[in-house]
Image 1 (cartoon, helix red, strand yellow):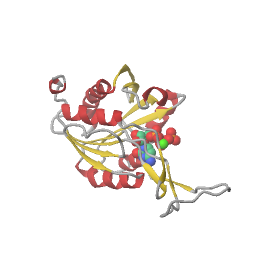
Image 2: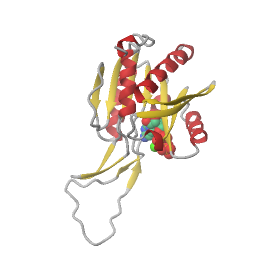
Image 3: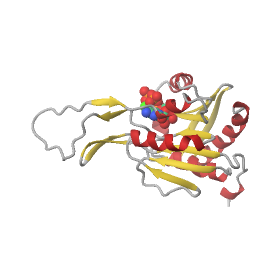
Amino acid sequence: LEASLQPKLLLGKRVLITAGPTFERIDAVRGITNTSSGKMGYAIAKAAYEAGADVVLVSGETALPTPIGSRRINVQSAQQMQQAVNAEVDQADIFIGVAAVADYYVLNPSEQKIKKDAHILTLELAPNPDILAGITARPNAPFCVGFAAESENLLEYAEAKRLRKKLPLLVANLVQTAMGADHNEVILLDDHGETRLHSAPKIDIARKLMAHIARLYPSIQQ
Ligand code: CTP
Ligand code: CA
């Protein structure tokens, strides 16, 4: 009931969301990933749909059911996530990058399972593309929202990230609070300053984020 009573602040808007972790293959049975349950991104997808948006959810591997109202595209690696996002982004009014994208991938993944021996194993890692930065750099970029998961110096690191990625809005959260939990506590950073969203269920945080986006969006897109 509460879901259907949400104000339709984003009616008809097309929202593209990334969520969950990426997984970078090492060999046939192993990989490198980031800690992410996907819960925050999926809550945002649900809240965007409640607000009247058309929602596309590009998701790394999670244990979560598809949120009601989302068209979900499953991916594994950061490069697959970028391809899926690039294929959808021209149709988006708003892009929200919630995914915990691995910053590196394994240069020469092995087709076969690597057998153990007594020696040190060295993996060569190469940097992944920055999906969000690639979108903000586009000429007709949608309204872009980033997340910054930090373990220390939250405000300082997050505001620097917002400016570096040229984002009108960035959601800062402490990893210690957010990870795997059903509650979250975040700070929204935009050109007007900070807005603190105190500890609440992730769906409540997501609904407040939609309201905040709806306030900023029209003044920036024109
Ligand atoms: N992001 C992305 N593609 C990447 C890395 C990050 O799209 N390859 C997005 C995330 O989804 C998030 C934002 O960029 O919205 C910030 O991610 P974060 O990991 O906090 O920042 P980084 O720029 O990767 O910097 P660092 O990990 O060094 O703090
Ligand atoms: Ca990163």
